[in-house]
Amino acid sequence: MLPELAKDDAQERRNQIYLRLEVILLTATVAGCAGLTVLHVFWLAVIVIVLLAWQLALPACFLYLIGKPLVTSESPKFRRRLRKLPVLSEDEFYDQYYRRTEIPKDTVVRLRRCLISEFHPLVERAVPSDCLALIEDEVDFADALHMVGRELNIRFIRADYKNIDGTFDNLIRETHRRVSRFPRWVSS
Image (cartoon, rainbow, N blue to C red):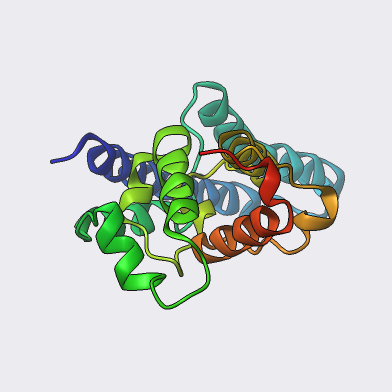
C-alpha cells in the first residue's frame, strides 16, 4: 500500500471516530437538558452554549492543534483516483493531449516537470482536466504561478490570476499565452 493511501485511510478513520463521538456527546446533552424545568431557563441556555462549544469547537480545535485536522474535501478520493492512472512519459502526454494545438512541446514538458518536482509527484498522473488544487489541499495558485514563472523565466501579473481556473490545462494554456506574448524572455 502506498504511504499516501494509508495516510488518507487513517484520516478517514479519524473522521469517522470524531463523528461517532459527536453523536454520543449530542445525545448526552439532549438527555441532560430534558430534565430541566422552565425555572432553569438561564442555566439551560448557559449549559447548552457550553456543551455545544465542548462538542463542536473544542474537539475540532484539539485535532487541529495536534496536527490532525478534519479533512472534508475531495482531495483524498481524488489522489486515490490519480494513483490508479498510468504514468505518461513526456512524449506520451504531449502526443495525447497537445500535439494538435499551437502549444509547443517544450512549454508543456517544462511546465509538467516543474509541477512534478516542485508541486507534487502525482502531477505526472494528472490529465489536463484535473484540478491541481485537489492534488494538494493547501495550494496557493499565486505561489504556483511564481514557481512556474521562475522555471520558465516569465512573470505572471495580477491580471493573469483571474484567468486561472485551477485545472492543469488552464495553467498550461495561460503559461503558453504568457510565453508567446514575451518570447524573448524565455530561455530553455
